[in-house]
Image 1: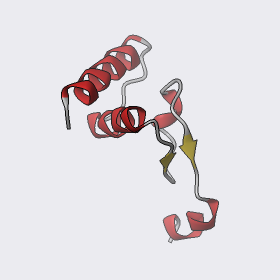
Image 2 (image 1 turned 135 degrees about the vertical axis):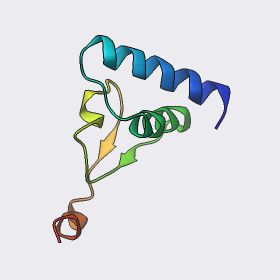
Image 3 (image 1 turned 135 degrees about the horizontal axis):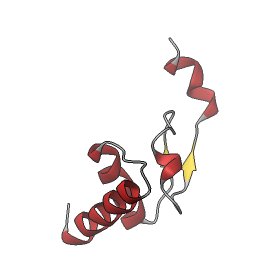
Image 4 (image 1 turned 120 degrees about the vertical axis):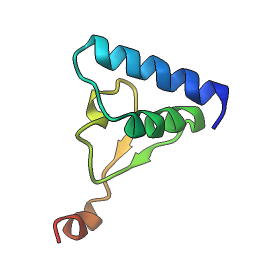
Length: 69
């Protein structure tokens, strides 16, 4: 964790609240780290991340059956 990640997290949180689409701060931090690393987020739960403009999300479809077990 560093200042750049925290600043991005704050920016994301404020923007999502302004748009009426707040998400848990844990997901905000994950998104901020993804942006900081210029990475792609692999997740089976895209609900919250779909509201974050510019985030690259990868859904590992071969693992979906594990999430529904």
